[in-house]
Image (cartoon, rainbow, N blue to C red):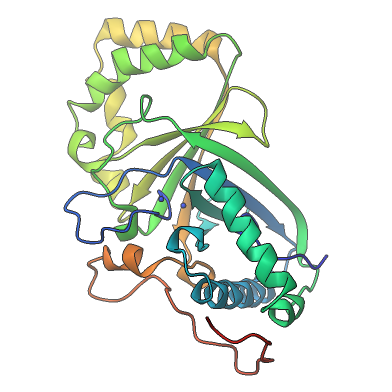
Length: 300
């Protein structure tokens, strides 16, 4: 099951960022395109998978050092669920565009067939995955809320809500959301403390599927700025109208909480510099493996 590690094998974000300005006062906007990969790991194999994932991170970091164009380098954020399938790992990779996705994949393919052929061929593959699936999603700023309130670089958790709407009712639902829910959010601490980045899935899932990402600096954010505060802040008419729309527009919705796992993540130095925590959290340059096989080509 050995495969060339690509950016999609595993957040620009929410998740990772393509924004180069580390000194910006406000958090950069979410990236235009995300690839979200869920891996189901065989029971009892999570520790072995963590080592395998770290090996991929090391190869990714080495490849980045050989890619002159910063926009063509690959980064990812790895997340582990707090509730739900404990044998799951989710990766989020951010792109500036679909053209950027293609360009970055080509860089990996070029290195894997050339200067880093030995590195990619030597990646461990212990067949630890029970299943793996990826989807592609595009950012919808018109549907999002509070962008800029929370910088994902300073977050340690992610609340991820997947929403499946009935085809033909998407516009109706989002109009009601903006008319009845957002004004209620404005009456709560969410107005200043929460960011909801909405993405529309374009491939890899059923149509009319949306994913909302809310980065959390701490799980305590769910106590002080909880979505549970929104409904009590709605007007009675707003509750009635929103319930009516939701009743015939929503097929299903699921919210999962994830913890960021820096050991299986790789972020850019610019991204890590936006995190002002006293203790370094993100990995930007993972230590090489204890024993490595040198590849031909060197650095450039």
